[in-house]
Amino acid sequence: MPCRRVLRACALLASVLVLGSAPGSTARADGARIESRIDLGQLVQRSDVIFLGTVRRVAHQRQTTRAYGEDRVWIATYRLQIEVGEVLRGADRLEVKPGQRVWVHRGSDSRPGKWVLLRDFYDSGYGLPGAKAGDRVLVFGSNGTLQEGKPAYLSISEVERADRAEAAREAIAKAEAKVRAGWRDGSKCKAGKFLHDGRCRTPEQIVAGVACPEGAQAEAEEPAPGALRVQCSNAGTFEGPSLSWGRAGYPSAAGAMAAGQREGEWRFWDGQGRPQRTTHYLAGKRHGAEVRFHDNGQIACEGRWADDLQDGTWTCYTEAGAVAGRYEMQRGTGAVRGWRPDGTLQSEQEQVAGRAMGLNRLYDRDGKLELEGAYVDGRMHGLFRYLRPDGTVRLTLCYRRGDEVWRAEEPAEAAQRRCP
Image (cartoon, rainbow, N blue to C red; front, side, top):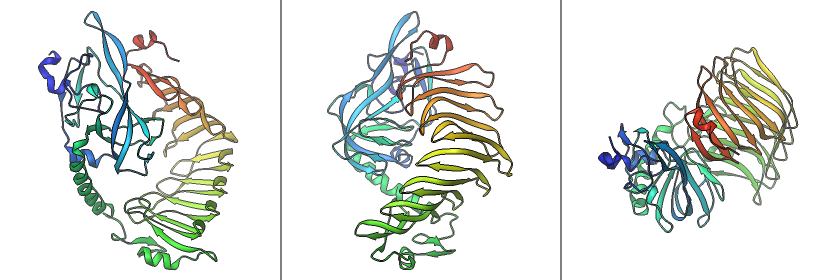
């Protein structure tokens, strides 16, 4: 079926980032089928970052693909530089201030000669192919942190017209009320109270029981919606006990501060109150022993840090307590390995001075290679290959210093393309 017979769907093929445009001059896919849709309320629920902004630059990356006997140009990656305005949600994840600029981009899953299936389709009425500098937009993002001057990788992203901001605010308020009510489902403590010393206590009760050093006073704050942090402040500098709780009311972190930095032994828990790790700090850096835990409370891995770098022998265990494996590090240099709770090898990552540098490999439960690629200065660089269980390549991606340059599903196509 030619694309012109399904104009409404074809307008939204090229990216999950922006949907709902009229077809442009650049070729995309042959057609699409919409399997499921979401509305604004559902979009808000799954978006961690929502902000208003102004498009300042448009820099889509285009590629040429042979289809139906001719070369067709298509947009492989949509890229917009946006000047951030009012942040409606996720100010803690949006590491820029209003007036600063961020890059938002998303690779396309479609190309000429391909049909696509659209799931969780959101009809925004605004199209990224037609976006131009000066447009006022409303940006939705998830599972990524936006940083000034750096590309932002967001697993779920949409862009709307700015005039939908009021509707988005109403949806945010409803979503947050619903989420807050659900945070305490199954929790030991009701809303407004937090588990401390085996009992459910209010923030005021916790503050009253904290023993601060001379000259310091305990203060409570809400670092994230529904969460709690209690620290001792001395003229704006944190000294003494520091305690944190997650939005479900369970402890999330506990330790001591010295001159505003972590010091000594710190304990961390997950959202359900299960121990995650115990780490020692010196002047804010990990320094000394660290023990990580499985969900069942058994030790998962143990080793040492030196000036925030893994150092010496690290030993990892199965959930049953058997040794899964070991690896050696010399002040952050070596190959970091990870094992699953059942003891099967999951990952290998070469590092230099604590930064990813060299080969990165992921393995399936049968020990077969799933992914292989390389990092340079902590960023993906060069070819990354995803493999099937039989060892054949199912997808090849090319990166340049962390930015995706191109992708190819067929090995023959990848072999014909250059990658830095």
